[in-house]
Image 1 (cartoon, helix red, strand yellow):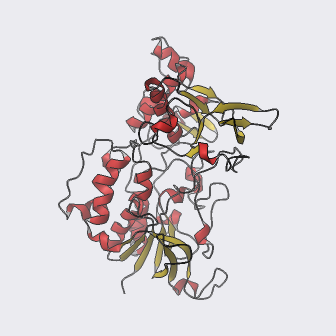
Image 2: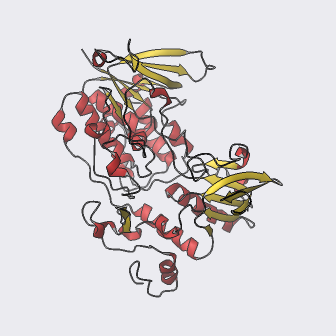
Image 3: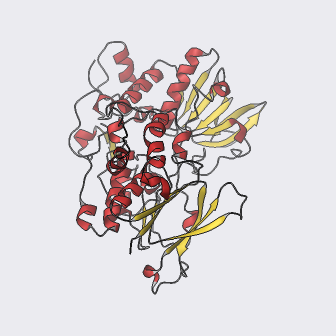
Length: 462
């Protein structure tokens, strides 16, 4: 009997999972909460990816697309989110054989075993999964349906659950009440959201690529619109950690972003507030008062708008009746945690992994894609493609293929390994040595380069 595999989420990784499942002779059913496939990607369609097309097209998905006469994009071009939707996700979801296996506007609200709650054990592994979902066009409680499957792959991502502003992982005091002046992740500050930020004082909280990209765009907006001011709220005390590996990064666009951003900071285009652990956000006289420390005695900044780019966290609410085990800190599969723990290993160069690391104690249930990384910020789309290739092989009983490594990830050029920051090549934590090149590891070094002088010793000499 053909196995039926339910896949939660119709993003690039979820669709790749469906392609691999179908190629293995099994039946996929993809449940997507949004109105179209790639709904989350559409929210950041203005963003250019760090990786070129060659890293963003799954091989099984490509084989389905080629059967429709699809013209593949130039592998060396860097797509935007909009390009990814137009050239890849839309054709894959609407033109290939997958189109009859995708249910949109179908939000999963619960998953269990047929006849078994979480407590019952005997015979559990023989029972099919029951996936409860509702049509998001209907009010709560209406339009609910159930689909049964032999296997479940949760590739629902984390986009809908961004981290809050509070340095303690909770909402800052007053954050919810100040929601009208707060945005999360990566608003389109040079496009659709331009009017909201032009001529305003805008604070950005975060130190990852989303924060850096947004700050870079705001610096450009500052050039275009007088009166625009940009403040970088940084929880850590070392801005240089956000600058990345420069020319040592094998994803050139990622390295260039960090280097260009460092130059903006060095030139004073962006005001930096380091060691700023946000505790309070309040609206006073139509402006935001963003505070760190106690309400009366701590530091604070005044801004018109706040963008919180502090990463994302997974939603496990609909998995309460399943037996899952997660790392207590990262909220990812336990076997994956040592590979991606940002306290020990901060770069995106993670050893390829698959079914073995992603399977749960609940037989037939797997995490994949961004959700598999829990709160870790280093996920790359190509990692997700390798994950689902391995998972599909495992479900089909091809253990050799499930264990085989078919992916080499590009290094970032810089990593925190075992709590010590350094070049990933010299640290030896990320695989083969990265190419020698610039490593803008401190503001002083970037400023020296801008002046045409020798650096401070943290990177190459000018």
